[in-house]
Image (cartoon, rainbow, N blue to C red; front, side):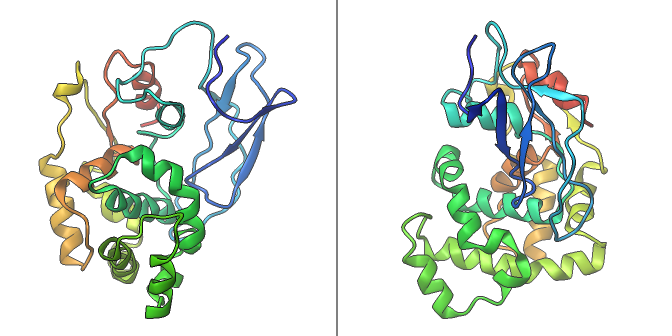
Length: 254
C-alpha cells in the first residue's frame, strides 16, 4: 500500500479544500477501497465561501498498485494537487479569483513554489476576499512586501490588488465572475485527449480571448499563458493525458 502525503490519523483523512478556504473536512475511508478522498465542490455562490457536506461518491487518491499520472506530478505536493484538484470544475467566485491571482504569482516560478506558499497567501490576502483586498492602502502593500512567507514582488502584489478592484465590474455586468470566465468554453469543460505532454498547448484562442477581455476590465498579470494555466486549474479544460487515471474521473465531472 502506497499512501501519498496527507495527514492520516485514526483511519481518517483530514483535507483542506482549496476552493472553500475556510472549510476543513474529515472524511472516513471508503470501505471498498481503503484510501479515498471525497470530492467536495463549491456551489455557484459568487464572492463567498460556505460549508458544503461531502458527497458520497469518492475520488481515488491512494490505492494499491501503481497509477499512471501526468508526468509533471512527481513530488508529494504536486501529486496531491494533481490527484485532488487540477482540472476539477470550479464555480465559486472567490476560489476562481484565488486561482487567477496565484497563477499570476507563479509567473517565472514553479507551481510547486506557489502551492507551498498557498496557505500564506490566503492569510496575507484575507482568504482572497476581493472587497477587502481592493481597499488595501500603501501601508498594507509595505506589509506584504515585508512578508517573508509569500513572493515579495511589488508588481505581482499590486496586480493582485488591482485585480480585486476590477472584479466587481465584471460581477455586476455578468452576474458572477464564474459566468464571465466560463463563457469562454461555452459553460462546460472542454474535453481534450492529449497523448503526450508535448501535445498540451501553453495558450489557445480561448485563453487569448479571456486574457484580452480581462485586461479590458483592468486586470493585470493575465497574459494568454497565465490564463490557460488558470483554465487548466479550474477545470475549464481537461488537460490530463488520456492515459492518466484522472482523465476519465475529471471528464465525468463535466
